[in-house]
Image (cartoon, rainbow, N blue to C red; front, side, top):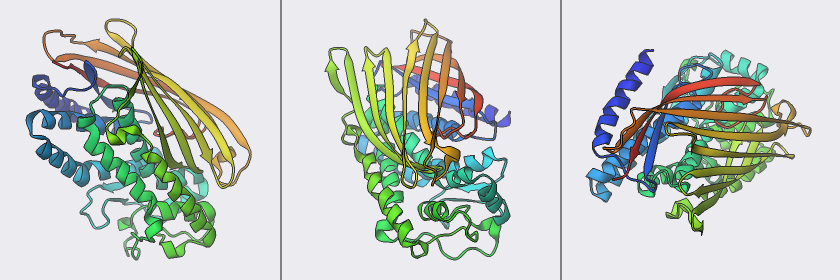
Amino acid sequence: MKRITVLLLAMASVASLAAQDAPSAGSSEQRYSFVLRDSPARLFTMRQFDENSLSGFRLLSGLLNRDLKPVLSYAIQGAFGLLFFKTLTHEEGHRSILAGEDIGAVSHPFPFSERSGYVDGVTDATLQNLRDTKFPTFIRLHTAGFESDYMLATREETLMSQGDESYKNLVVEYLLRKVAIVRYFTEGIFKHDTDGPEEADELRRDIVGNDLYSVIRHLFRPTMAYTRYTRYADLTDRERHYLHRVEARTFLNLANANLIGVSNVRLADDLRGNIGLGHCMGPFGDFVDEKLWLACKEKVKVNAYLREFENLDRWFLGAGIGINDYPVGKRLEVSAIVHYWNQPLGLSFTERRGKSGGAVDVTGRYKLLLRHDSRFQYLSLDLGVIYKTAGFLPEEIELRKYLGVRFGLSLGFRDR
């Protein structure tokens, strides 16, 4: 309750400022969503932290862009992103997986800390037990930072492609996020090591060490003597071959017109769209996305994707389609998305047999405090429900069959 109170107070302060001079964007209305409670109710989930952080950044960047010259505004946004936002969300991605298992940990998100951002406070015995009893979750603990970065970039692409946020308000964060994704996945090209000797106090050790090297080593050697830190020299020839595979695929994340300031293209008089590619890792290997966004008359906003998962040497297919912010009435908007996947049995890195599954995620927003005489338009109460079968869905903490509920608030503004 204390966390919710603090968040509400912070939102109220920001709203009072933004109501006076809210940021402009490509559409006539902008919405800033904050998840107050998510499932599982373990501190902050990955989705909760990603959505709240991005809404906060958008409000900040919009205010800076309206009140300051572009050079100064972008410099402040860049400093904020590099020194706080980018590393914070990445490390919270790792921590959220531990929180989902009721394992306490401490996040150190600042890049000027001794390891340039890390999570510690967990014993070797706890981590080894997680490896030996819930291997897919243990692997995801390593890849969760990548996952959070990837989903934030996808959220930003959706906002820009469907005209819900301007390029100038997201360009700094978006470019920094893309650079970070590519940098993480190309460390092996330069044989760069981030792991030194393990600290004498195990509670001060980073939970996974180098994310990329460590996840590959554990995927190929799941029962080896447990150690946290992995250096390039520790990888076998087979593991380095796999490393080169994911290194090459990470450049797919640069295949999006938003990177050069083209948020969408006109397909017809009232129809605009955009496409893009993406790549990330998950509990049993990596995956590639082909993404599509459509917006018709600023009312019907569709997003869809095709997804190809690959474990060691077998491909599995997935797909999803959804609609965003569809007005059901004067006060009610609904967003919904349906996911389908075929993934290896047991989320195994080596299994060749697949199992189908999917998820349905629906969010309703009921608008209160409707106003038409100011830039502040409404405050909405948001309720979301997700049902999923067993399987991996990015940003959803649970890998098992699951019914989850979340609630929050949204602030709506319009352009002058």
